Picture (cartoon, rainbow, N blue to C red):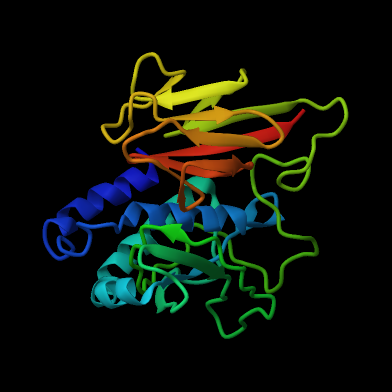
Length: 282
């Protein structure tokens, strides 16, 4: 079972109680959970073959109305979001410099329903590394969920972290990219494209790939929130995704949209299903 699905199931009991009034409108906690996963992926730093460090301190910026409505519940939801990040890191073999924390902040420049996610790596001991870094904010996204404080430690059995990282820049853990997002492929190189849904890989071997609940779709998604012909991936330089008039729309890298450019690692949410788009040269 995927990490996001477990997160949703844990929230079901809370939605019937404390969060019933909070989450009945536009707020979707699973979207912010997906954004936190993407923040880890995008800011993973490879220290050596056995150690990939990801941020452990997350800041979720909300519009003033969303902040006022959600801040009283930030503690409980923050605990669930922190647990989700810890589970995802264990699944991806990521490690942390210190405890996982999710902070909720108000941003006056955001409209209701929009959010931003920022992250940084903070050491847990008094020898906090000066190399701890704050990452730039992601694009605003529809459906602003809440976040709060959590304090779980790094996964059990994680190796101790060295005081400073070895030389070298930040890199995404897998799969490797041949160049920066959006760059043209090298002459003679072939681009392999695929999507990952709940741990299953689906190769993209044609110019278009239709995703939906219908058995006639190229990739069938068994999800009541997905339309029969929900969306279509179109390969190219760059590849794109297009909504096909679905009922619930698509969310790409945290933003509700009808059409978007895809890059390696882009996260697509349709209904309650998260799809990861991958591409690599060679």
